[in-house]
Image 1 (cartoon, rainbow, N blue to C red):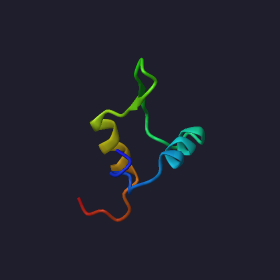
Image 2: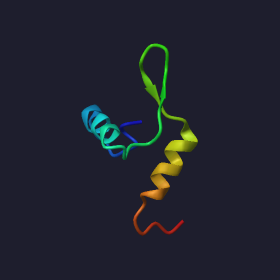
Image 3: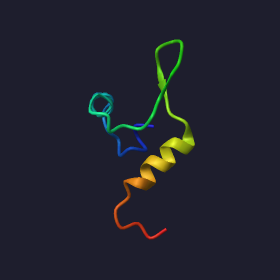
Image 4: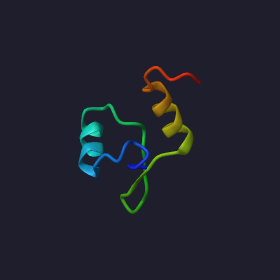
Length: 53
């Protein structure tokens, strides 16, 4: 997923979570975070600049 966000670092993603600007995540029992594909696509679409879809 980090690659799809432009190759951002894990630290950047967690910082976005601290700032409440990251997309909604699901925390697994192991503690790992996951993002549903539809949530990722919607989040990316909302942040597209000048996209001609």
